[in-house]
Amino acid sequence: MRRTTDTSQPLDALLRQLNPALKGWCVYFRPGVSSATFAYLSHYTWRQVESWLRRKHCRSTWKDLRRRYCDVGWWPASDERPLFNPAKVTTTRYRYRGTNSHPDPLARPG
Image (cartoon, rainbow, N blue to C red; front, side, top):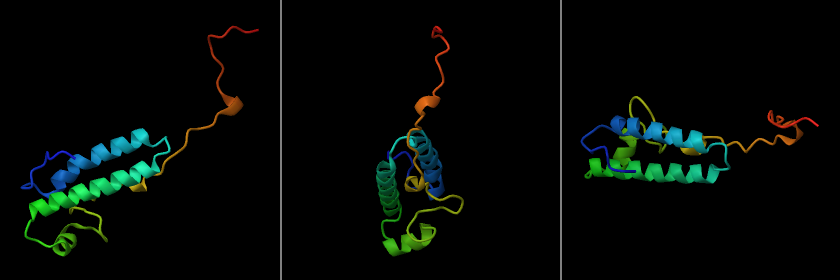
């Protein structure tokens, strides 16, 4: 995660930048078998947001930050939106077409 959002901005400004990027990446890679990668991305993103919050409030304890910025449990959220969690995206394997594939329209009959 690049430090494009200064710590003077609210958490919601950071989440407005992160969530579309994470969602787009997950939509693109969803058809593959990428659940382990999504779990890693979720962990990495959480750690980066946590370190951003610690830079923003360097004198606060993690317990205070969690009470202020985490939704239910440990997941960061602002008043308007939570951080998108890539680990909850379900993956789909490539579809097996078998003998039901469409014939080539340019092939010659015979």
